[in-house]
Length: 453
Image (cartoon, rainbow, N blue to C red; front, side):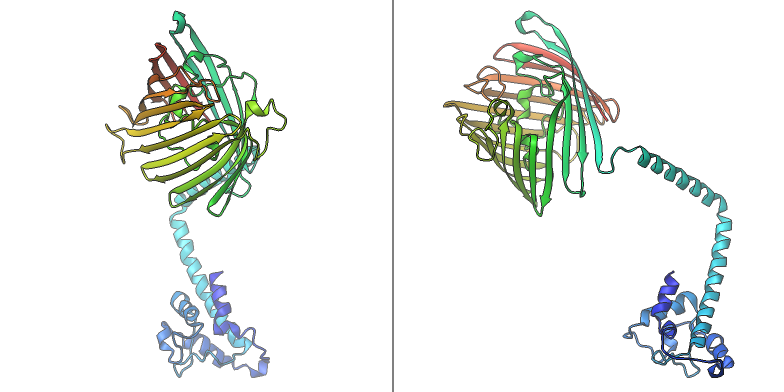
């Protein structure tokens, strides 16, 4: 097809469209044969009247060099501006087609030489086409991907010297839908039977306390230039942040270690909400609100951007390759809640004996009582074996009003935890871990198995 496109734009082929009528009487067969055969050229430089500035220069050059089917006049000119009869154009086209036939014969020889290899490739292509057809036939949606996570946990604590073991599960199914390739509708179904397991330690990071299947996420995100907007009927604070300023935990044990050191500012409030994030060149700024689920369930007028029960969060941050820093402020008028936090992280360029470091601290007031918190988290990637990781964290909080909005332990309780994650396969990991709460003198151990699909 490339040859015919070139012919269409070449002056020779334009003669096919010229309003020049030719009859058999006007045709000089000897002249046509001489033009089409005897004066063939091998380089466009043989034409004295063709200049590089001519609009069809490149097309004519390609016809000569690739196919060798362009002829000139005995005077050494091409006469590109001269009209030609349809018979002359037909003769020129016939010469080019003869050359294409020669090329085709060469290709046939190559195909015969590599017949076995071509047959193997054809079989592979046919197999891939069959698999693609099967996948297309079996997919439940062309716009939606399903991702799943299932956790089984076995562990316990020595609280009250009962030393009882608990076997629990946490299952999540997330439907990720995109209508434009840039937006996201996330719907997550979740179920778990943790209930009050490990309640004396403030909860495990991955625990879910309902054995009924619930809508755990339902929000829509879409970009407008450098802005990303989020609207959620069921969402959480961190779903709408421009960044989460911590590399720890990658697989933590306790709830307290998941808040980037500023547990009051990053309280992971859950409910309905909306937010907007601006991101450019590593810098990001977010403004959002969430109406806490437990309040909205008891107040018919609790929803809305200007509701006095909404939890508002503002964050500014910067994320570069290997490090990041962010400051956040969260407030709620009804709950008399004002919390601020500053958090940062750093990771080495390569895994080794130097771990990634995440630090943060927070402070503020809840119902007139002063609060504070801090954490330090370390993660060694590829620890001992490639793909595995080792984590260690220490932190403390003094919430003063423990139990208001944020699950907590006793005031000024220092927490220490450590874990080792075995990556058994790409989709299965086994993570044993231990933790200790200094204020309540509680020791615990957990073995968590995680399946992703």
